[in-house]
Length: 270
Image 1 (tube, helix red, strand yellow):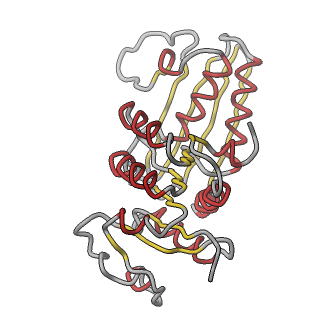
Image 2 (tube, rainbow, N blue to C red; image 1 turned 135 degrees about the vertical axis):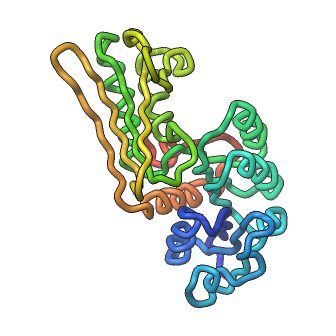
Image 3 (cartoon, rainbow, N blue to C red; image 1 turned 45 degrees about the vertical axis):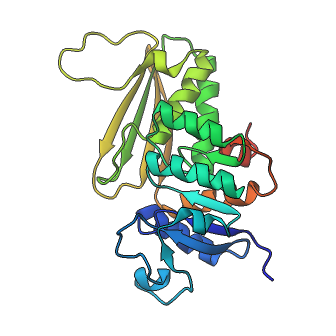
């Protein structure tokens, strides 16, 4: 009997869902045991491989998370905030590791995830790549070293179909910069500029979101001071790096106790 962890992918037909399926299917360290889509989706009841336009994989796409999670050791979830918090409750019941790449959460969503984490292992990150998580650490270090004479601006670019802004990664970088300065991001974030805005407020952390084409993900953290600028940058050119990071997180979470973790925990960067 195969003892490798069984993984369910939610949002199977999406950009990340397809990439996760490909990466997990090729892994020798895990098995794909389920794929989920929203009720009424035309993939429901079909073999996953055939639905994706390839050979049969022996996994039928379903719409019942409770049934799918019962046989899984991990769930990898890049869907929507409402769907993810519903999945978190069920993953906690199944005692399965819940890897969350969903972004755009409101405070009420985060409260529900915290409650679920009392019973299950939740690994949530705005970005699953090694490079971006290293960028987060560097952003905090640079923010710690510089005073507020250096303005901080986070510029992010993504494909035209992305539905939330700023990106989860941009907010993660903003949190790191705010932590470096010993302030709350909620108190210093400047997320909307239009018209006559007046001069920039000292100490604010600004965000700019670009949407277009098929951009996978680009993030710049700019520290603009008198007479000089420091720019930290990460460019993703292949979406599979996020899928590989999510798989790494699912495997790392096996045998962990309940709690909330992130990719800095997974990568040993804390």
